[in-house]
Length: 323
Figure 1 (cartoon, rainbow, N blue to C red):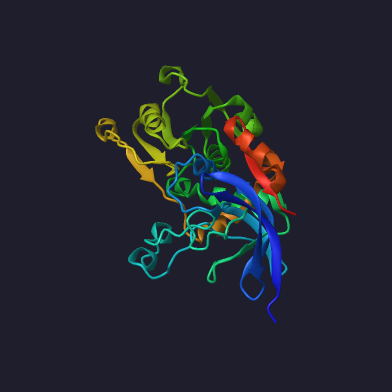
Figure 2 (cartoon, rainbow, N blue to C red):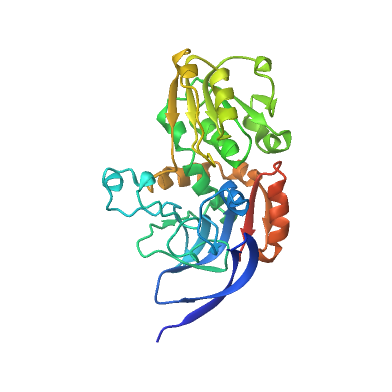
């Protein structure tokens, strides 16, 4: 006999209004009992109407839950496994564009809920005992900094443009990989959370001439034409610019600015499932400083407070506690 579980979920309805609703799932199909779900900039953009998504939907793609008695996390990207990109090992560029908690075919499959249905073939990653539930939420974001692994950072000077969660986790990742000197631009309130690993801090939108030195590598964690232009200006000739792929919309950029400095550009879009393996290990080894990145936790019923915090850009990681 099929058992049913009734649970509460935070639904983004038509008109882009949030509300708590009751849902039901069947226990004969894959599901997770949620523990935590991170609130990402992508979720903020969904609330603002900047994403082309079908409504109603349950958001939440940075997830930690219990499946068959084990604490697990899973990738946002749900590859079809059949298209030419997936078959070539580029599941992050799957032609189906199926993203858990964003564009998934099941609009109720999202982490902002007490329970969530899971796609049939989803890949689950067990969380080591040393990693707390809340810190485990950051595994998905850490995997999103994979472009840093495509260049040798040892002995190099790195600047990160943007001090949001992507910027902060990129800094932690880069330190783990052996960067020599690291600067970051953004808000002092955010950078102070990880100041122990930062060598040079610059306020958001600081004039380029006030940077102390030219950088070997500049990572754009802002994801807009302004932050990319700033990155190109800050990096030294024949240096490397990393575009993190967190754009909310397409933009055009004058490539001659790269050519005139003979720059290398590294781009990334999301990650592939195997990136979770190294991301879990980095989170495990850096769990103490990552704990400091988490600044706000809310119950699902406190979603209005969570939205208010999101509107204030000077925060660390914000998440829902669903225990």
